[in-house]
Length: 281
Image (cartoon, rainbow, N blue to C red; front, side):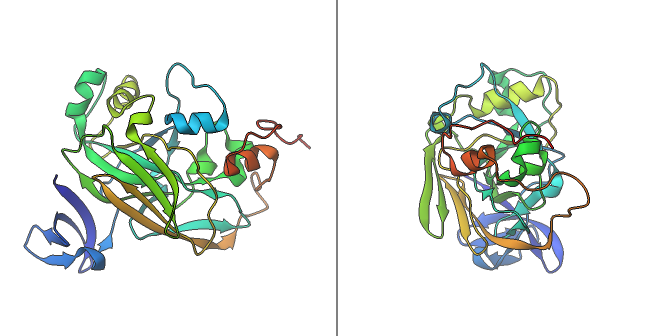
């Protein structure tokens, strides 16, 4: 299966093709995969993510799914790459990993059927849909600050074409230990359904990204941790967690909280008070 990677080479953004353990630029220059400075493999105009899709994640929270998917938006300023640092802002505690498969659009898609969706997909890459649950009490609906903070959308290492999404294993590792272990076969709505559903009302352009959901056992990580997401046939996306250089400002906006809603979501439990927001002051 062909794999394409965007890297920084001699100060310029270069599109490469993987050839074994080397990346080959169009002009013939070669760089070892291990030595390459990776960039996100695509440049999307938007990143859209499904809330819940994997059955193991739904079962973990002991909830039911709606009849159709629901979605949220991650701004393009949250994009990050293979090898990049994931920033947990100073003053925040509840940064969770979520290993996922990312769908990359190849042809403009609008008002298409699920049967037609495959013709509009360029390929797939690995994603980690990090969530900053410290802001869940105020942003649980939009997920903007929970999922949209800078650096929280790493993609990569490459874009793989001609990949069949069916029956593929997905694993997340923290410091070498398996923490998520799922399969694309446990998705309630498959890749083609998700693309067609969004494209009913939102035009999808080449390079746009749809995140397809995570299996059970999303948990918090700490500065210094190394997080890897491995998808069968797509490769392994690696990032490390760091503390941000500045604290969350206190003179504007909602502040980080530790309500039962925050803790139950971050830790994956079925708390008695799950969903109850702290009282307004």
